[in-house]
Length: 171
Image 1 (cartoon, rainbow, N blue to C red):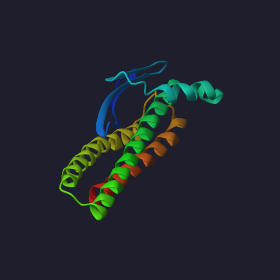
Image 2: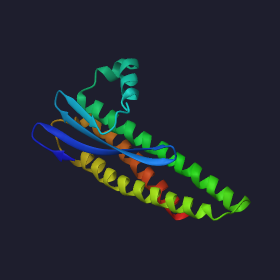
Image 3: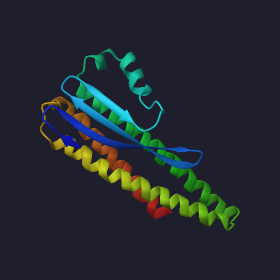
């Protein structure tokens, strides 16, 4: 995250599983006082949920662009919970296989999952720092009434971190 005179530049990582493989997408967000620009590495439309929120919620439409930036970050954090849910399902499946039908191929799957968890963990730590900086930094672009939402987002990222640590210890 960089706080510049007329805008804030944020780089986030978004994860999901495609064909049981952890995929990472970089998302860049530039928030100015009256504009927002987003860039992403993949063609996947991750912003359709933001568009749906905009269309359905009249109150949302009256907010400033910093609230839209927060909404995009919130959407990305929600996506990370989906990734963790998928990891949890894989852990349960592997535990069941170990108990009911142990075979040597499970070792490779466990190793791959452990690698995925460590990768995910390495992406969550900078996100915690980014959200914390966003909460503490004084900026003309981020409205004070948005700080409560950013604190909530920070709580969600802490929860992501805690679940990731539990999964890391479990596997």
